[in-house]
Image (cartoon, rainbow, N blue to C red; front, side, top):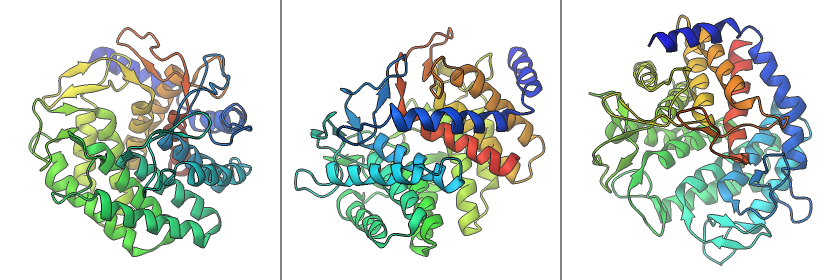
Length: 385
């Protein structure tokens, strides 16, 4: 713990202008990179990953959840005023998503993966993907309140209810059904419903979000050990040994604050417990590692980019709630994110993952991380200033 404390002190000492620095990085470089190399001007759609040199990997498959995340990012950039051009790009991305991924085989729902030229690669209907499609639709709806986009949101919720709802609560992994069940799709559906309420102010989405909060309390969260499990049987019973991902603990902290905001339902107890548990799984640099067990032991010392963004968001949520010291912890987490992951030779790029020895393990620059980085920076500006 002495090493972690020393690293934390160093991070705090560098944190004075980190919010301004991250915002400038995203405005000046990240949006520019992903709207040029990250957008396919020939076929339409977002590029899934860039080469280590920052060039488009045009032959890479197109994951549908990545298309949806990029729509969300560019719509959010426009809403924030950080990147006004994002509105046009988000709407072009949405047109591509609806044209290519929605029912291209005549079956309802969105396919899982497209080829680089927009054909079906994997026809799976994946619940995790659909959560991000709803998030993208909600973000696009917030731009202009377009009735057709609202209709797409409602239709997709009806599809989820008809095809993917589980009799044991929540939603199955996809169609066809697979095991084990994971908390991750449920978490992102929770996020999507909060976003849909923010965009529409329709109480139906408050109620839908409430279903996932109830699932969290009843099945996903172990109140005795204060950990969130990752994998479950069909009836939500635990799969032993329990796998713990501290990044998801942090993500839930932020989402529970959002749920409290839209419903007034107090979530402070669970946010505090989840954050305390997440902090047990840190390496000597103070970064969250990828996996631990239910007793606080680290299983994998590898560490990806996204958990570092999520722990910053968790501290930001706590700062918004008035927790003493949380703002300083949030800034220190943002310093770690910037220092270890965003200081990439490609302006606007990032390192996605490191092993326990600090060696980069993913050569490419995946588009999927933009969603985490942008949200951390925008939340930091809104709350920390």
